[in-house]
Amino acid sequence: MDPEKLLRYCLAKPGAWQDEPWEGDVVVKVGPKIFAFLGTGEAVGVKCGKGRDAADEWLVRYPQDATASAYIGRHGWNTLRLGGAIPDDEILEAVDTSYDAIVAALPKKDRP
Image (tube, rainbow, N blue to C red):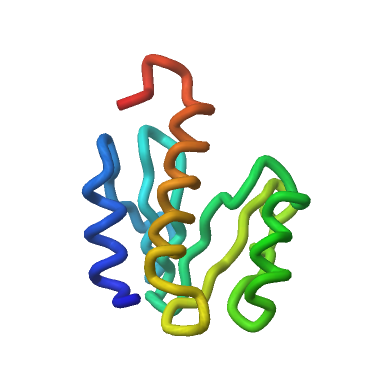
């Protein structure tokens, strides 16, 4: 997965916009909330489930390329390495799932 292509894919989602809350770390938000951490382009951080149980399926399937995200991993966030064993279509599906979960949790006034 090419990091530029992934960024374009994220930004094509309704209401998505790019931010850099920490110098050098690109994120994509919908409303005021992050749905994809793109960082430096080597991986993507996404919400992979409501909690660790659902998100842990990624760790079992791709032990070399999926890890629980630091600090927010307990809330179902994983970091998925780009260019590894995870197929591109599964990376895009994970972004879709993350986006949908974040949009669903937004107040109606903030939803696209």
